[in-house]
Length: 282
Image: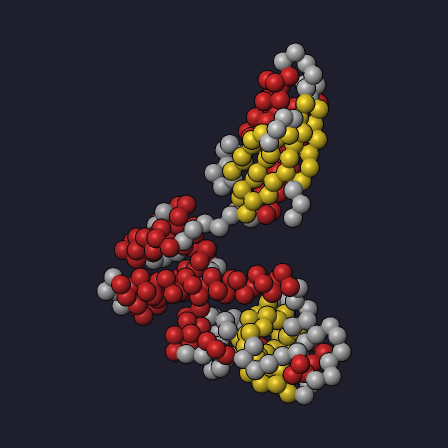
């Protein structure tokens, strides 16, 4: 099996563990693979997470522009992310498109693969350092983690919030569950995203300072019962106040920001406080 520059025993073993060969990719799935053969009419791609399955990408699906020489667009050993456009498991045939994958989805798929490879690395090396048979440890944990959580890295992250019991829920022994949790605590940092903006708050009433303070508190309260979200508010020079939202993903952060702004605006309308908001530019 050819996997470009990662073609070695470690990676081949990693790919076999990480994959589920019985699950043939379906239409619209994103797959990651390595170009192993270039023909005048298209390329063949060996899939990383589905060993034994080779996908074909026709020249018309490689780029959105006209291709005179296919080798100016692809090379042997190149890692590519492709979208499944035709799946025929009964014939072991898979047609994919490279050009139909947006840059952001391509980046995300590669990042997910690297995270999983990193998680596998952590587990294997931790087992070796603690005189645990790494092959047995991998065999007993990774398939269960993937089946229960979807991927290994997310399982390790989740244990940081919920403890080793989450691994036992996946059918892993209590001994291995504790060991996995220790690996997560030593090596995994929960990733977060941050969005921010500036609120303009001004009141001309006799107790305007208190009303501005309460407007800020209205924003702060929307996340006080959510341990996965952080709201920071501080002055950058009255009447301008910065609000920063930190959460696990942009969707959650954006939802909390809108909720905070709505709560602040409602308070301001009811209490004679001028309110404007300017979003940080990306």
